[in-house]
Length: 215
Image (cartoon, rainbow, N blue to C red; front, side, top):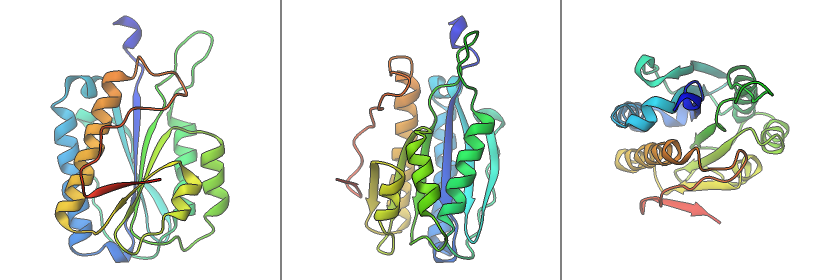
């Protein structure tokens, strides 16, 4: 167990907080983050390894919560406004991982490979192609992207990662199911992290029926 201490599983939630998320959707996201946190805090393995960060994007992007251990994490205040700066969010994600995730050196093992969940309900409104390609080419982590609702386009997300899922709608129950699946994915990863190769794919639990995996 000694070696395990100090190796974190960094989790980044990159959440679309643009104006189209206002009302029920953003409230469902708030509740989803709250439920995810409660679920992870009740799981001993996740509690020991998972560190959580939240990046939000609207007309710009900001890291509203730096990488924090679960017991010290306080839920961010999420408001929906503005446009959809997915490119800015990808730049900030790359900078945050570079700054916060410990790399393996000859003398110490670094953190586990980050697990990143990107969720958007629309189409990017900024220059997203370069930042998306940079994130994908650098293999910054295991990235799962979610196109949420009828207005979300899959193509930009496919530029970021091979693993893209789609939600048919932004109903509270659908978003609740999505965050539950995110939580299950984190718990599965934290339990199996020592068996997974440093840059190998992860095993995700099967999604509920409201979530389709995009081939």
